[in-house]
Length: 142
Image (cartoon, rainbow, N blue to C red; front, side):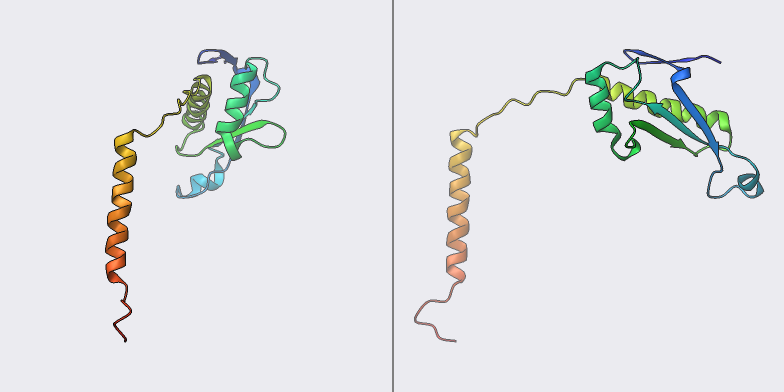
């Protein structure tokens, strides 16, 4: 089966490696006998399908899911069948690639308005007065 992952760019399934492992958790004897959990491996550093800017953003987004060799590992163990877990892993990879393909919004620096600066200073003055009233005066001894 040669399906393709599509987001703004295409990734062939031959760039993906699937390992089926034993899932943990409930499921009775089935868990011990069948390898239904999936580990999807995708070589981010050496993929010919990824432009450099997306590769860098994907590395940042993936965080701990990417190892020192640049291989992204996604584990899916939610479902009881290999096929459903495989589809879930592909869905997560597609979601990550889609996020990485979107350019981050540029933040425009803004300055506080005069009114907000004056309000901040007035609030500080009020707070200072309240705290000064709590202090003991020199006449009081206690």
